[in-house]
Image (cartoon, rainbow, N blue to C red; front, side, top):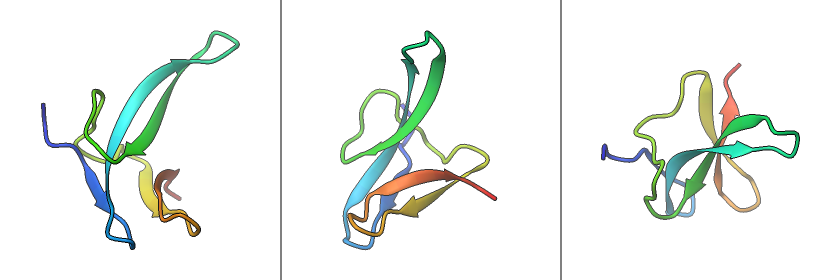
Length: 68
């Protein structure tokens, strides 16, 4: 497994980027991206093209946002 992409937030906590395919209620399959405190199945080694990492103001949790 490649090294997982890690992000350390302003509170000095490290998160790792993951992806998963989920099936929505209407049956459509959608890929989601999420950060976790540990490395799990589905970890990514880089931020996907067209996305950037931003931090939520309240919790400092990293999230992916589409680049402008």
